[in-house]
Image (cartoon, rainbow, N blue to C red; front, top):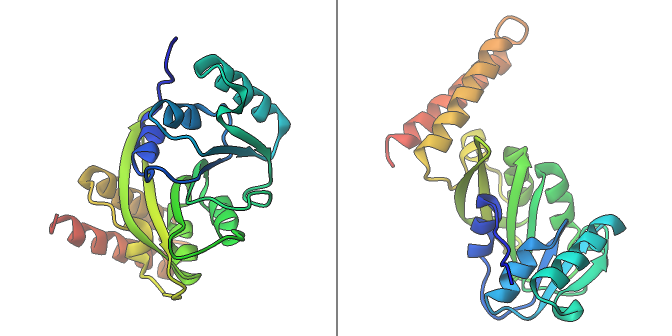
Length: 219
């Protein structure tokens, strides 16, 4: 039987999962990640999606790779709305704003709840929302896929609201110089594009880029 091959993004997310707990993959699509985790020894797996179509695909994936329909529990749910509990929550492949909404709507939140988050866009918005609402980032990894760089965050909750700098919002706890350099280039490009229409915004973006460049020199 063939085994599921994860993309670099999902492989990085899978590597952050703690062993032996209840694991929920939100927005599961084809359930490749839960299937991979099952074959790696995990047994308490839930795959959730807001639409029935992806769950039907997920069911087919589970049968194809595992051959047991009940190996992964499939739940029709808007985010975590219908999920009663999980030790590790994986939310990958969505925009940062949507991921933030799902995390903030978690009903079973505790200091031990582990969120593994992989935003496709707006990572800076996600970081700001997390820290403002009592979450913190333990670590971040990067993955390159289809000529794009992505970040994967390991996140916990401690209830302490914090304000973060713009530099941290854009760089987080990433130590990948290539990723950070790309962030700087994008900030400078955006700043230059709005230099004539909004001088203050342009200056702020360029200053943020400079702060991140200073961080890069320390890595």
